Length: 182
Image (cartoon, rainbow, N blue to C red; front, side):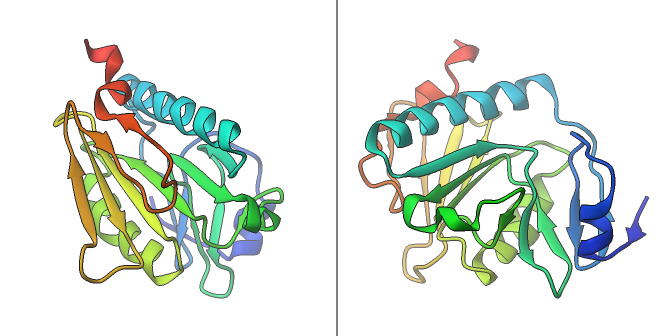
């Protein structure tokens, strides 16, 4: 069911852990993610959080957290995992007010198309620097550089080390993301 609302109405509502987003004034409430999806989300959070804490480079948070990309256009998203650099941590209040440096979307059959098209386009438009599209079925991590036109996406498979322009010191094998499958 789609409902029209403003950012003020959305943020003034009751707190919920259900996945939600406000897409130009239209409330979207996709179904809750499945078990495997959440295990992958948790694993990515652990890996990124450990790295960021060791390097002191910023903050990592797991969904659900509202990321207000455009208050005037009523656009709020809830990426699965969000990284905000230390230099920009001021955008983190009760919500994240602006574009994070890196977002992670773990793909599922219910949201794959939306995540890979609409959300990636929004992330690019509003200044997110990098988006990871993690596919639990193919066991791949696609790193989309949203600031570069010439090499916008790189795909990493089992045995490969994920490379990030936002977190250049990160050296994490794809296998670690999907280790619970083994």
